Length: 118
Image: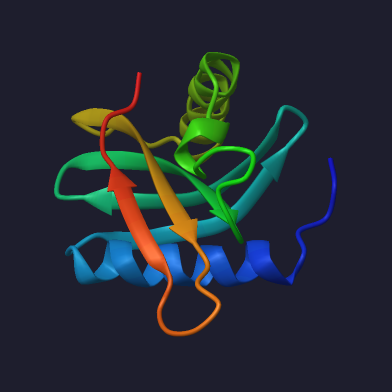
């Protein structure tokens, strides 16, 4: 697992703020276990949201959201199950979201919140 750079940390701060502005409660950031890391765990009403944050400086290699592959979604599901088991939490629903952050050279970042990726 590689350490996050400044751009990645910035994107996670932007994503957490966006989720909070949407009315979600951020429960945990950068939760780690042997299987990997969840960027953000949040609550959206009765739903637990496991959120992957992808931040890019440009789209030369695709958009930030395109970096979330089907294999990554499978891994996020496993991580969500592990988080739930370790925290003994039983939400009404669990959802996987992606927050894609495109850092602008000047001005605010472009942020896209994709709910319920599968």
